[in-house]
Image (cartoon, rainbow, N blue to C red; front, side, top):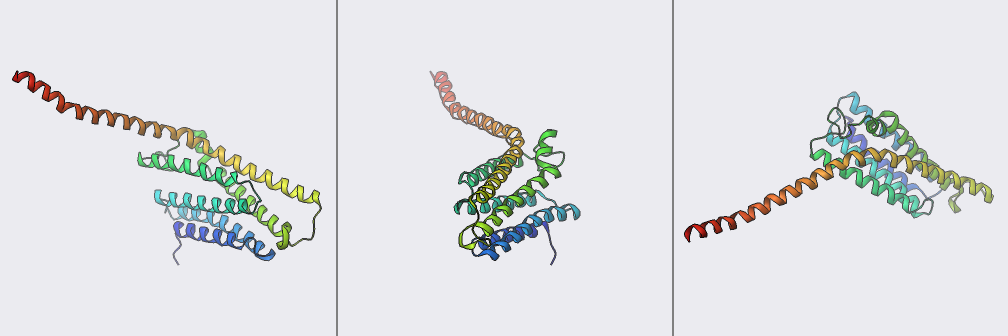
Length: 239
């Protein structure tokens, strides 16, 4: 099979959804889900590698990759929120952040800007460093992978009838929970930090569209008033 970045992205989403389906169905299936989670994040790195090596990077492919990221992170955090392992506000935050940044990227694309290169949406050095650099994207992917795997292992090892371990002391449970809270909080904070350049530099496209809408409304108004003015001039000439 001829692997393309888009096919790898689709496979990544399928593997991620399969992992979430396996969570909570038994201790060994939980561990299998953790392994699939690692595979899904690994495929995220693979599609970018194929795109760069074979020169297959396209604007549509970049949007598909972002869509895959959104689907993966939302389905994981939503599942862990449903089973009570993270706050419900965590998936809400990731959904709202993704919707806002993707909306601004859409406006930038409509204005002729791309996700990379000289004509990229982000023009400042700090914006490109926080969002587009390899270390930033790699660190963010690693944090999400660690977060999902940690929560999956906590589910597999400690929670109820699907636990592999026996009864843990309250102190052990508290330590494991503290680790989960710290890890998910750090992932959410870094996610927000990476969104700041898009929100700051993307605001110009909202302002530009609002300005264009105001000008358009003024033109329409002038067009509507023009016939009335012509009638008045005609009446005066007739009189």
